[in-house]
Image 1 (cartoon, helix red, strand yellow):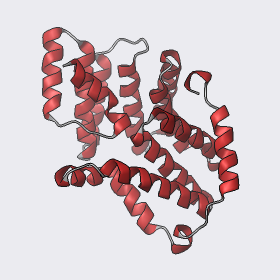
Image 2 (spheres, rainbow, N blue to C red; image 1 turned 180 degrees about the vertical axis):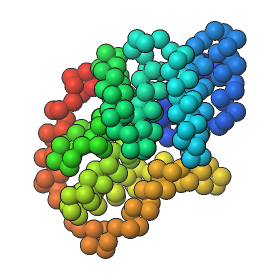
Image 3 (cartoon, rainbow, N blue to C red; image 1 turned 90 degrees about the horizontal axis):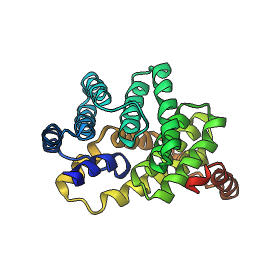
Length: 246
């Protein structure tokens, strides 16, 4: 059962959503073994399924239940629950509530010295900033996600950079972001069988990404990469990360 709990902890970073059957298994084991962290992770997994199904209110309720099962002190489980709530609240356009949770999550990531949680928090923070502030932070997130081997956070960081490029009217940055995201997603999808592949591309965030890329004008798709500027940004972004994740 510990292996299942670990898999739930990692699913946000590897993009592999575990089946619904795992929810009941983990919850039952948590109650039997009096493991509040397992019960919280079961609620976290159930919330992820509700988000995919578009049941946002149900997802928020499950995340609130998950938080109630965990102590207030820093833990990877609590930080994950708070970051998942942040995502939902940002989707619901409730930035003030989301930002408060994000600040708590980021502080926990630093205390725990957890690079994966930090990358997730930086991705959410950078996605909400104005373009000039967001781009350096998102490239730092990209560097960190790549160094951790987190395909899920890597493609999402690329996509966020592409979106900021679009907002700024910078065709080469938009193209680089979207091409990078597509490349990572293709690698993630490559080993999947037909049924898993269909579920993979049906996930709301990936579906939205494909729609965004299809909507890109021809001049964006054909824009040459500005390799000099890109190299400078990436070099600066490495130095912006905390020492414990460099």
